[in-house]
Length: 195
Image (cartoon, rainbow, N blue to C red; front, side, top):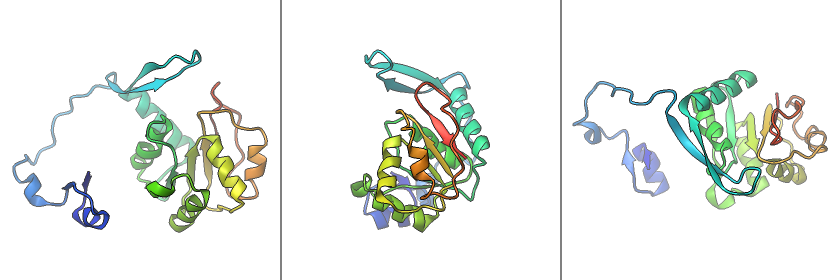
């Protein structure tokens, strides 16, 4: 784990303290040369695809950056935003959840590991940190809606990875009065967004 020493101490975890000057004493002061090109593979996503047979799909740095930039511009994401990070790290949307937010200077609110599937915990965190962005599979949104807890700070919902139930947006509105109305799905997988 790379973090500040105070965070490592608080978490009680081993790692490298990036604020430890001795750790970097032998490193050059200049920025290393970039070795990646836009067309290079950024990561491989393994998906079942439409056939149900797992396959690897490569994503380039350019395509990932285009996606992050487009989503941030589309939703006006900036330093005042906080994303409630609910997507599993093996889910492709987690790339936006983390790097999209950080690229815009926004924050990422990560649920406690032992409570990551508890809607009431999500609500507590969203309220405490004034989360403004929600990105997850529709099932998580439905779990939150069933809790009945309002989240007025959320202004953007993005859902993907599964079909969005047609009645879900209407059930969300009373609990998220500051979120804009959802748009029609932008892809066959059912990805849609609200702004």
